[in-house]
Image (cartoon, rainbow, N blue to C red; front, side):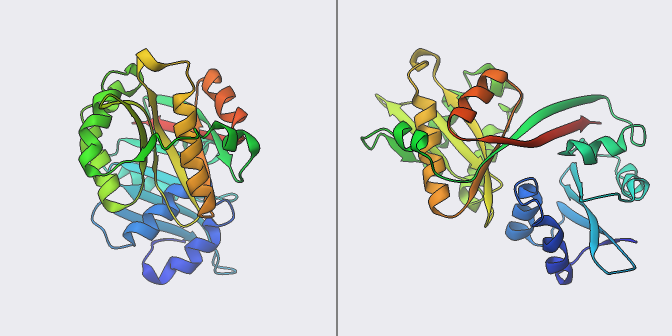
Length: 265
């Protein structure tokens, strides 16, 4: 049986999500930060009538949908919910779960990413943190300077229009943090987190100014970010599709834990 979830279902939902907390950091973060009664967010759960446990969950966050299941689930039931939304933009999630909708829901384009996690401190991260206090934690007042850097980088071109609004919201709400390095009042390296929750956070927005590359600056910023979050008892997660980036992150101790698929509608 699939039904809409409410605050009364929090523990039932968390019992499912905690089985793979890193892979579920988006749903966990959204529930912890926003609860169940928001107009931009809806949660549905498939409940097993034989034992009362939650078998699967479907999150709508604005125009995006994120399904998760730890075994077989009612694919058609979730697909029916999504087909009723004429404004749906994409479906994303663990590849095994998202692939279940292939041929059931029409989509135009698919993207696949590697999903990696860092769970504990290691000597490489310690050695990557610069000895001086060159790395700063951003506030809302730093948004323009940080986005002035990311505006110049092709990788961030698709998100350029909304980058300032998104970063302001993230910093103001405390759902993420941004660290950066400056040279003569210009931001030259940065890294951020998003979807922070009580157990984990996603690393995003890693960038270095073209004139300052190959100096390990972004690695230092990421290392500081990882250090602070690990000390808070949180694991770090990230996506990558570039083999070169994968090598860099694995050098810091990140390990692949799965793959993530995005189906654009």
